[in-house]
Structure formats: structure tokens, C-alpha cells
Image (tube, rainbow, N blue to C red; front, side):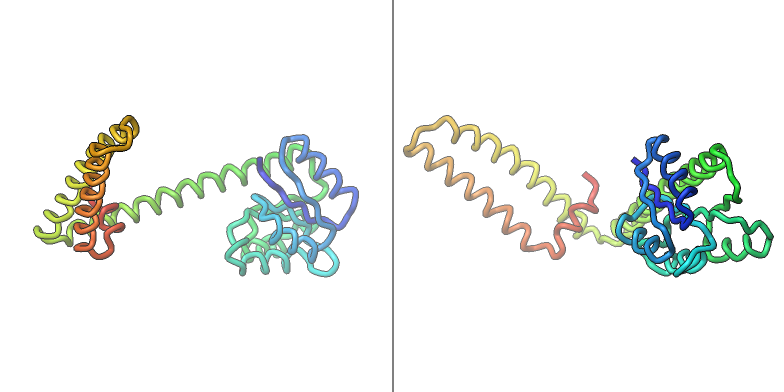
Length: 219
């Protein structure tokens, strides 16, 4: 469920927006001025903020500026509500990082269109960021593999082979142990498990940063 913070000092407008967005299935939170709105953004980490420009305590520009300076709130989509429609005011908001403007008076359609458009763009942006991070990680792994010499590559291949073989052996022995009563055969099985583990631990001690190397090696 999408969480939306509405910062608006006019009670009627705030109530109408909260009701409208709630009926659309969103989780909504209201704030009656810039200070409580800024605190609400930090506390609730909303997916979208709808904020009036002219408010007591802190105006919308102050709220936006503060949000854009905090890494935790930097990327939250931000829509201004305003009765100020001149280009200078709009440009000021855009420079500070506003994503859209709704000019009062606005209709139900105006609000829903602005909100849905902004949420869709945010989803696309997050998806691109995720794919960029994956690609960067893959490139790092490729560079790491390319930097391995033949001896290191062979050693990592041996490790993977030994581990796969050890898993099979341990699985077999574990199943045997479950069915055996206490006695000599069970003790031999336990000794085999211990020997396999000791061999693998000895192998691991040869490799610095083993966890990273194993993850970066193709299977």
C-alpha cells in the first residue's frame, strides 16, 4: 500500500485530500503545518508528499529544501499545492526539487492524475536504479574474475568441487546416522563426518576473503 503524506494548513482542503486519497486505497497521513509535516516525513517515510506552499511555521519551500538535504527523504516524490501560478514561483519549486504542481482550486481528477503519474515515474526510476546496481555488481565480478591468475582460478575450482562432493557425503552420512542405533557403526559414521569437515576447513584456511571469492566464482 502506498503511503502519502498531505501537508496542508487549511482544514477543509486537508480533510478532502485525505478522504480522496484514502478512498483510492492509499495509506494517508495528514499534517497541519510545515513543522509537523517535516517531522511526519521523517517519521513515516512516505512514498509521496503533497504539500501546500503558503503555511505558518515553515512554508512549503522550506519543507522541500529540508527534505532534499536529508539522504533519507531526498528521493521522496513531492507535489506542491499552490494558489500561486506564476512562472517564478513554479520555477523556484522546481529548482528546489519539486516534481509537480497542483494549482488551487483543483479537481478530483487533477489530484489523482498527478499522484498516479508521480508514483508511476518513481516506480520506473527505482526499477532502473535496481538494474543499474545489478549491472554494476556484475561488472565488478567480471573484473574480479579477469584479475585472477591460473593458480587462483584452479584453486577456486578445486574448492567448489570439494564442497559439492562434501555436501553429498554429509547428506548420505546424516541419513545413515538417523537410522543407526548407538554402536560401532554409528561411531564410524560420526568419525567420517568429522574427517570431511576437517578437510573442508583446512581447504578454507588457504583462501583469504573466502566468502567473497566463492560468490564471485562461476558454478
